Amino acid sequence: MPVDHYENFPVASLLLPKALRQPIEVIYHFARSADDLADEGDAPPSERLQGLKAYQQALDRIEAGTPTDTPLFQRLAQVIQTHQLPIQLFRDLLDAFAQDVVKTRYTDYPELLDYCRRSANPVGRLLLHLCNRTAAEQLHQSDCICSALQLINFWQDVAIDWQKHRIYIPQNDMANFGIDEGDIAAGHRSPAWCKLMGFQIERTRALMRTGAPLVQHLPGRLGWEIRLTIQGGLRILDRIEAVNYDVFLHRPRLGLPDWLAIACRSLTM
Image (cartoon, rainbow, N blue to C red; front, side, top):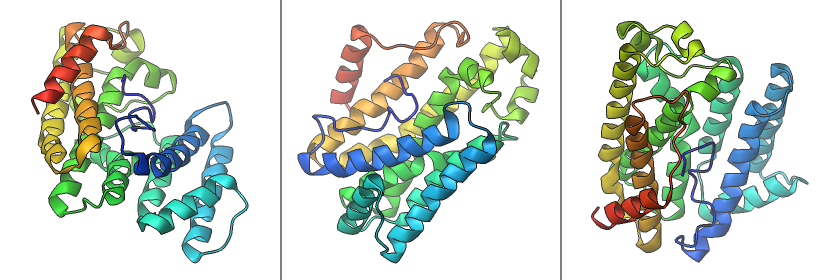
């Protein structure tokens, strides 16, 4: 932690079973590089979308069994074939990244969760496919965890996203709590802002807790990896509350005391 970009993906962690590290690294590099196409640098939207289209075309070739000369997609094709991973999950990620290029506001919570369904949930589902834990309940719990992690990223990065002309807080929630875009632009931590953020954080915390029982179904070290990920996300929410929701001046950072608390909480899950 902090929950940021694709850093909540457990990349090559020593906690992970050795057999999972290489496929997870490949999936991570696919997701990270595609996300960077959509989000980093100064390229115009048309160029970003064209780059993502090339990724979609590469997935088409993998699905058709057509060879590719790009090392990343050669490795990805091998991982998909070896582990029988649903290629639609990779398409969902690309669809979400493309949406980020053109969409900067979300009307309500269901619309935001639909974005999370494509931007975050495929990561968890791919992990479950890698370890053969794909019962309906397990997939649902994974979706809750991944959506919660994505939402935590939004709440801690309100100021950063504003600089990118994006607001992920649902527009109807802002209206209900009496907050407008001028408040975000000014970094105004008013009582109304605190109530709005408190509402979002408690809803996200409940979502994470709904997914948390998944760890009981995950084998060995992977289960511990996800325990730490869940507790790290919850700790970020605690940190936002600790600065009285002033994410404009205080982006949460976790130090040694936080990690000790995360470890202790993980042991009691």
